[in-house]
Image 1 (cartoon, rainbow, N blue to C red):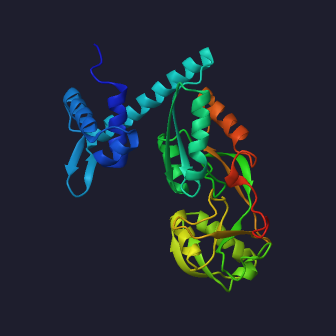
Image 2 (cartoon, rainbow, N blue to C red; image 1 turned 180 degrees about the vertical axis):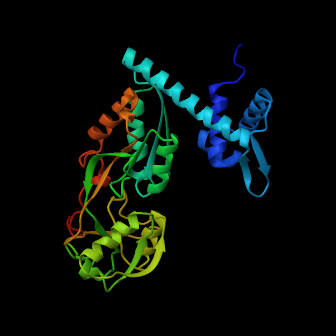
Image 3 (cartoon, rainbow, N blue to C red; image 1 turned 90 degrees about the vertical axis):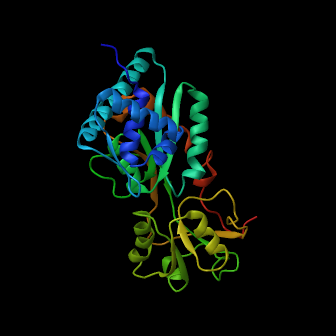
Length: 315
């Protein structure tokens, strides 16, 4: 009996099941909402069951039957991906879908250029990207919506693998008028008495605060934000300093204020930037090539964001 549904329709079903919303699912798979709705309607008609309960205020949720179909659809998509990997391994062709997640604090500075160079080398790969905090990346890997994720070595769960790529030392970011902006380096003790704008993301914030705890001091946090650009603008306007590991491309905040970047020294450990993978992910030729590409591209010589912070008074 011929199939009367497509893998693409199953992909849309899984996307809605994960997002709980047709609009959000449409954004994630980069198609229109009517296309998603039509696919769901077709599958419901084909299978003869209602897949979702539609609640205006709360979006869509899977019915009992829909949950069973969703689980099987995910397995079918995984197996389809394995077939693509097998074909690629036989022909030594890097192809198929590759979805890479990036930590929101540095995705804009690293992931697009990494994607561009990989896509130029392997045009048959259908490359997609998304951004989130570290727990979001873990969740995407476990659900199979991500093939790989760029993140930090922060509490990597036992069921995931971490491939280190670069060591990033922390630095203080300050307004040019800050009392410590002209220093060659600063310690957590130097900073503790000054107002701090904390980049308050899951796991990352714990790392920034650990720099102070290891030195036996407590930072004076006056503001918290989950957005890197907002943090830089608050710092540039003189509301406090902050701590980060990735150098921005510009030495100005998003609202145009000049910034200074001063190395943080003392009892502070660097963070490791790397790829987070599920066990067995590198059985895919495409994933293996992407891992190798990251090793080749993510070097201080090629990525300005990874270069050490220099003396702000130099030059």
